[in-house]
Image 1 (cartoon, rainbow, N blue to C red):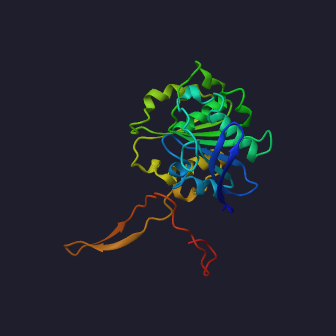
Image 2: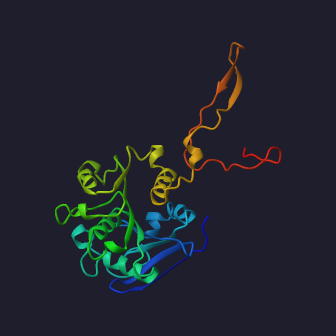
Length: 262
């Protein structure tokens, strides 16, 4: 599990006043979450992912960029060529790193839409890449400013995509994916399929970041329940039920009879 928590905001050098939502284990590895646009930290991550990362031992900070969510100020320009400009989103994230983690610490960056593009910009930037650990780019909005700049990324990168998203065209973005040297793709076909459920994405992201699968039992059917049924003609038959897990399985408990999980 994970403990602790809280929210707050404060000034960061070079970034003005930025609000943030922070939660997690005090000594855990820092994971900074970057929202899309138009959006905010709570809208983008409040209903998923944060609890899973905290459970995995991360100290999570989700930033509200200027003019978004609880942060005052003028919204930033969100095109990729503005990510690394003075006073832009990369400098705000770097200032947050400096405020929250010792110098030289590499933080995990999880970005959705615009935030995914900011994370990729920081990862290839000579100024910021020394602070960037692993990256999760969730439906990233990003275009190269300099040809093949993505090839300079040295971090492990997980790109999450669903092909039927009308705002994020996977076919157009796929050439970028091929340029990232250490990229892992997690791609679903439709929003309504099990692979794109919040639980499935959380599980894949945590496994990518930690190497641990926290729901291994969901990979296989442990038992097929059976039931004796009778047809309209009075013929008895045994029905076998299949199980499909969509989310966290029922918690297994220990019985007093055999000391085993049941």
